[in-house]
Image (cartoon, rainbow, N blue to C red):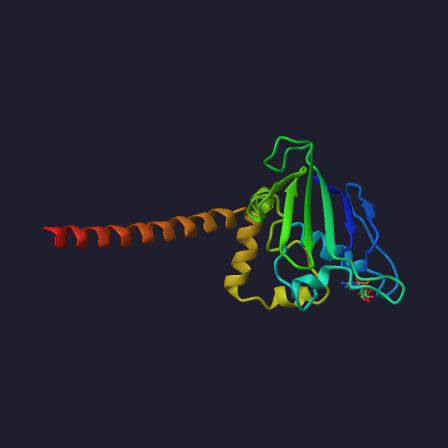
Length: 199
Ligand code: ATP
C-alpha cells in the first residue's frame, strides 16, 4: 500500500486544482517558507478524517477553505482527494486502488466518499484504522510534534502503540458496546420497576 495521488482544490493555499503524483518510497517536498509544504501534509490529514482544527493549524475548521488573496476571491468549498494503491490488499476493501475524498462547504459540515460513493466519517476511519494511517494521525509528525510525543503521558503513549497495533478500533467498539449494555440494563431496571407497580 502506498499513497499514490493527492489532489487539492480550494484547500488552504491551493485555490486551483493541484495534483501531486507520489511514488512508492520516500517523497520530499521542497520549497520556500510559506509556499504550502505543510498545507500538503494538512490536506493528507484532513482527507483521512482529521477533526482537530489545531492539528490543521487553524482556528476553526473552515480555515481550511481558500480564504482569498489580493488577486483572487475566497472560495466556498475545499476538496481533497487521496488515492491509495491497495494492490497488496492492505486496506480491507476489494479494490486495487482506493480514492478517499472529503469536501467541506463554508456553510456546513464535511462530506466523505470512498471510490465516489458517499459515506460516513466512520467508514473512512474504519477503512484506515488497521493500515497505520488512522484518524489519530500519529504517522503524520508535524513541526514541533516530535517534542510532544517525547513528552507524552504514559496513557497517550499507550494510545500511539494501540493505534499502530490496530487495537484502537476494537477499543472504540468495546466502549460503544458497553454504553449500549448500560442503557439496556437501565431499561431492564425500569421494566422491573413498572412490573412491580402493575402487580
Ligand atoms: P514553512 O517552510 O515556513 O514551514 P510551508 O511551505 O510549510 O512554510 P505552509 O505553512 O504550508 O508553508 O503555508 C502557509 C501559507 O498558506 C501562507 O502563505 C498562508 O497564507 C497560506 N494559507 C493557509 N491557509 C490558507 C487559506 N485558508 N487560504 C489561503 N491561503 C492560506
